[in-house]
Image (cartoon, rainbow, N blue to C red; front, side, top):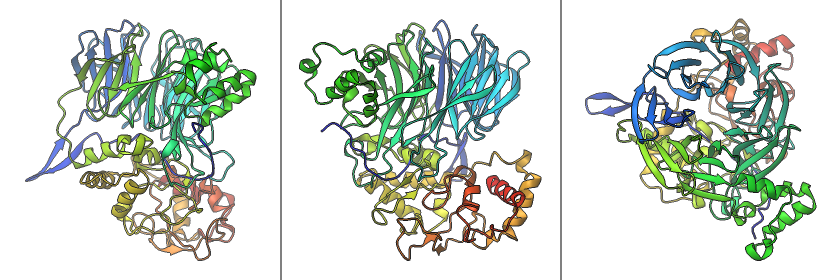
Length: 637
C-alpha cells in the first residue's frame, strides 16, 4: 500500500553549525585544527568561476569551474555563509554568521571594499541588481535586512517569522519570499507548521504569510521560478501525531517540496521527495534549471542530489496526463493523478502519497560527490550542478543529465576528523538510520529543537512531549522531560536504538557524545553590545530573583535545580502523579514552545495564560510592564 497514512503524535529536525576553530587535545596540550567546510556556492554569469563560502576556515574559495580546480582563497570573512554576485560579476557579497555583517568583495583582488552591519547570524544573501539592494536572512534575529548598495548601508529590517535562513527574489524584484525555519505555534494548535513570508520590496513589509502543511519544519531552500509565478520550498514533514513506534513508509518523518502560487499568495500543494522504502532525509538547498524544467535539491542527510522534473509535475497537477498512464505505469499511485484531473483539490492528497512522484518517473537521485551537501547552484547553461559538500571539504561538479561527477574540487587540506567533528558528521547522517528516513539533526536542528512535540516510547504511549534542546544535556542529569534516562549518555544510545532503529553504531556513538558536549549556547540576539542587558531586562532580572521567585527552582549557571515537580494544570494526557524536571533556561529565547507539552507558544503565554496558579513563578500579580520586563530578561538568557 503506497499511500502514507496519517494518525496522531510528536519529535524533531536539521543543519548544525560548528565552531570556526576547533581545538583538540594533542599530547602535550592543545592544537588548533581548522576543517574545510564549503557551505554556499555561487556561479559567475559566464559559468567560468565558482565562489564557495568555507564556514569553518573563515574564507571564500575561488574555483575555476572549467578546469575543475581551486584558484585561490580569500581569508576575509569570519564564518562566511550566504553569497551573492553583482550583475556584472565584479563584486561578491558575503554574509558573516559570526559578526552579523555583509561584505562587498572585489572579485579581481579579493579585497573587502565595504562592510555593513545586518542582523544576528545572517544566512542567505540575495542580490537585486535592478533595485541596487541586498536582502539578508538573519536566522537569530528573525528578520530580513535590506542593504542599499549605493552607499552600502542597512536601510531596513523587515520582521518575519522564526529563524529565516533562505530567500529568493522574483525576476521583477518586486517580491521576496522567505523560508522561516521553525514553527511559531503552540504544539497543540490545529496546524503546527513553518511559514513562508512574502515581502513587498517596494513597501518593505510583509504582505502575505503562507503556512505550510501540518508538521512542516526545518524549512530550508526556497527558489522562485524564472517566470516569477511559483516559489518552491523544501522542508521536513514530521508526522508528530504518531507514536514513534516504527519508521516504515515515513511513519515519523518525510521530506517535502511545497509549491506556492505567488499570484494568489497561497500554498498550491506539497509533494513528497522520498520513495516508498528510502527517505530523502534533511533536504537543504534548491536550484532550478534555466529553462524551469528541473529542480535540484541537496539532501544533506543522504549525501545526494535529487532531480525533480518540475515542468512535468506541473503538467500532472493541471490534469494533463499521458494517454498510456494505466498501462505504462500499472501502479495504484497513478490513481491520485486521475483524481486530480477530475478535481484539482485532490492535489492535497499528495502530501501523504509516497509513490505519486516516484511512480511517474519525476524523481532521480545521484551522489553529491561528498558528505553532507549544503548549497548548490547550476551553471548558466544548465549542464552542470555544483554541490558544496560540508564534511568532505569539497565542491563537486555534476553532469545534470547523467549525474556523473565531472570533478571534485578540494577547498583545501582537510585534517583527519577528531572525535567532535566525527560526532557532528554522524549526528547529521541519515544513512545510519533504517531506510534513511531521518538523522539526529532532523529532530534536533543545530542540536536544538524542531518546535514540535513527540510521543516517544521511553515513558509510555499517549503522552507527547516537546523536543528538548541538547545544549548542556551532559550537565543536566537525569534527562528527558520526566527524567526517565539517568543521563545524556544513556539517552543518546536509546535514541540510536529506538529512534534511528540502529543498534550497531558501535564506537562511533562516543563521537556523538563528544559532539554534544562541545555544543555551547549562542549569545541571545536580545542582548546589547558586549552582551549587556537592556534596562528592561535588568528590571526583569530583579523580578526573576526576587518578586517573581523564578530562581527558587531555576537556579545555578543553567537555571535549573534538576528536581521533579508536578505541573499544574496538567496536560490532558498527563497521568496522576506525573512529575517533570525543571527545564534549564539557557537559550530559552530559541526553545519555544514552552512547558513540557509545548502548550505555550510564547514566554508571555506561559507566564500569564498558563500560570494562573503561580506554579511557574509568582506572576499573577505582576503588572503588564513587569511581565514585559521579566520576558525581556528571560529572552536574554
